[in-house]
Amino acid sequence: MGSLGMTELLIILGIAVLMFGGSKIPGVAKGLGEGIRNFKAALKGDL
Image (cartoon, rainbow, N blue to C red; front, side, top):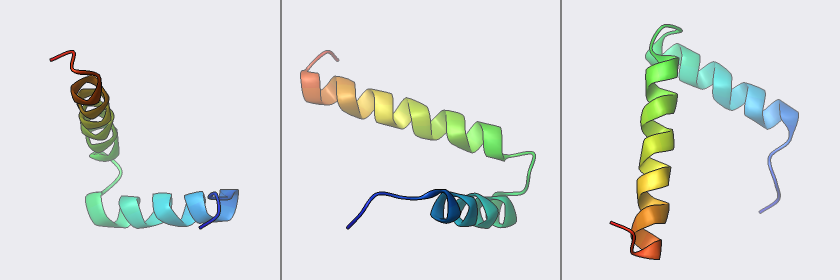
């Protein structure tokens, strides 16, 4: 699997807008960021 290019990122963003609507995207992104942060903290054992 290679890295994602600009075209792939735009397609993913377009699908996300269709699924969640434009107004909910910031909340979804915030929740995803917090989830990743918590996962990394759990791997380090900082909980």
